[in-house]
Length: 392
Image 1 (cartoon, rainbow, N blue to C red):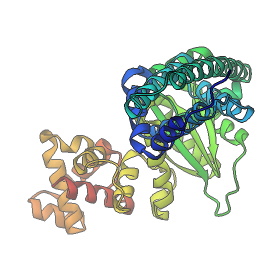
Image 2: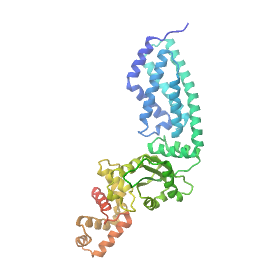
Image 3: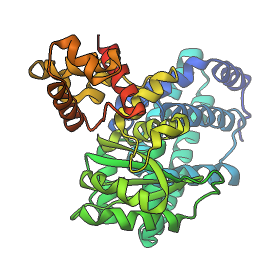
Image 4: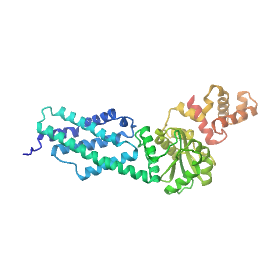
């Protein structure tokens, strides 16, 4: 004789689905007990929370109705497994997360129904065991198939890897290292991230081949490191070795392109570097793109500061722009720059500092050499002015 689902199950189901603390308890337990999930940044936690909420509702529904996983459920689990294969999160860690969630679910039910009937408790155990067994098989199979597919189509796999880095869809540097090893590549770390676009006003979406053509022109100095390329609308995004940054201006100039290059960031900060570069291209005035000049970290930080969205503290932005001029030993150069900006001419600055005009001009040349910024250029003078102002 089969026992019918009790009213207690439905009551508990309704209480738990309506209580947001249950999902938070599941996410907290997974974050604490599964190392890969502990390494997730804040941008990834909403996805974990959404999956936890869906899984909670489905499992409680199966328990309340003596149901089993249906085709739509299995498709969802296979999709989750494929996504984890693409972002490098190990399938063993994913399955462990589901087991941890099952434990939290059991504890929460016990707290709400301390006198749960034996039939209901046995039904919960059967449901969890059967569900975990089914989803383990489905997810492991989908994970393996996606991994093989990515490894077989190398070009697509490399593009997806950069797409995931830009979107922040890597669980940790360790998971990224494992994914790189499966593809047989070594990524540049620290790296140079370039976001570039044609200068023309009408810029249709780029073909991926356009980005790879730009990559071929820039990636010759990387040694064993593997550069990556992808597209975002009308822009190409390239992950390059640091040495390639020296050639970016010439290569973009030949193609009548402009761009922003962020250097020295680790692979765990590619998403932040991409947002910084993209925002810089969105907001830079036309005169910032003078011939042969590529926007840099310093330009990008100043631009987002002007837009009211600073990506770093003012003292950090000042150091990025001014470089060695922040050293005590170079105080005389910073004083010369300040006098030049404040007075508007080299002669007036020299009089203010009681220097010969040639001495003042020599100091301004040293400022250019040390910072890469020419105080005579309107845009670069503005960035230097902002940097020395916020530093004070």
